[in-house]
Length: 280
Image (cartoon, one colour):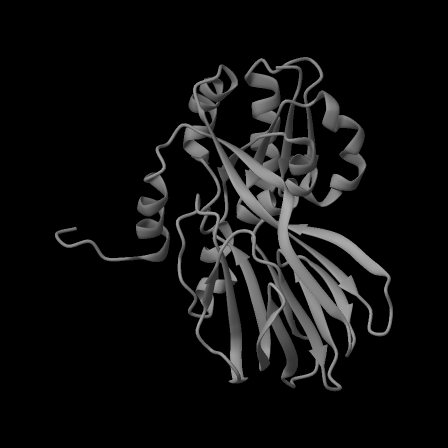
């Protein structure tokens, strides 16, 4: 490997301590580096010379890191210091003894689909974006506690005009996030499918729609209420009535190194979400 980057959650003091230990105790290549997840805009020049990124935090840290790694095709190994850690690979206790195995090639490649969105302002032909997300895009009401009206189409066919607090389009990876919290289905994370789910629907389709990976979804904001387009839950863009959000599969992939088998995800569901197992 040329260089290894370490991206950590700056709000967790222990994350910096572990990042420094990894950098100095694992004999990483000389040009290896570390950075807080909140400061990734300055890292673009490092992408060409980086072969692996280790994230130290949780799923939120990975969602931020993917903005840097996905366009460059850099794989991630995630260390969990968060609450759920569906995308992470290692616990804190496993990090130091197991990381050398990933550096030496003891892993498989896990590629995850991402989404992209463009925004077209009402009455304009100028697009904003594209924006890219690993988990989901959400079109939802902003600060005002009023429902929004959203006309939805899939592959050009109108499906419904939704009156709801919002709409979520999530990847299989993101199906365990906001989608799950509002009653949507959990998909196998290696699936290419997408999920379209309403949030607190007042009118229109309430059931989740599971879509093929190549589906093209358009959501046009109607009525008089403004809204917000949320990208992976941490980046927001204001929407005005008449704006249209076009959503489709991103050309980017999020790449992870895995030593755990694919079935490890289902054990994680049991542990993280508190599902009961008979006899335990």
